[in-house]
Image (cartoon, rainbow, N blue to C red):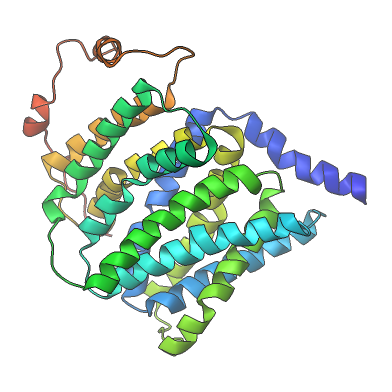
Length: 340
């Protein structure tokens, strides 16, 4: 049985190792970003904490079933505690605080802008706690990445709505995902993804269960809610978080965190096709700027480079010769598709 469990545990690792990191990263960004419009639909039919408990509880039970069917050993002792801590931070505390803030009127553009600093906060915390170096190319990538986020959410950004508690909740959510990402990389990446993610999701569901009970477990049984709940469970929790787990295991935490710069601009495009939101030239440009930031932040050379040299290197990329950010002002949105 032990040999069977070891072979089952090694199978997903070997399969993931055969796929290039760039492909995994692109799939992760796309799948993760679909969760925002799906959650917007679901929240029209459910209270926020109730939705999260149903999502995390459902995903946790499915991961537990996959663990049993695969003959995978469950983490024990400290390993189990580490997975539970990650789930409490990355899932329970992050999503709980952000959903609370959005439900109490905090502008979603402002929330996206604050969470858009996650790669920077993660890098700074990693440097302070673990002495991880941040190279000049990464700093430049962070600047472009955050600039892309600002372009993507700038038009929808406004203050007002919510009070001190709600804005504090947004900052807590930012710290929760940043600390949780570092903690997972440091302490909870060596377990099998199926059992590790089962514990993460079940811990998050248990953390939020009292709040869902306080809401009265309020949700309706409409087809829209059923479809959106199935999406956030199947696509976001089962697929996107599995990719996040594998990416953290394979790569440096700063490089994985940099992918979050792409979430707001990619989400803007998905919102355009799914929800009928506007897609302006600034949002389209935000994708290009954020992509350049991720490229710079994740392509770290073995030697230190000066900012001037990095800029010259960026300018020499294919298609970059003679280009500036000015064309962003003239970018055109793609033809509008019919709303499903």
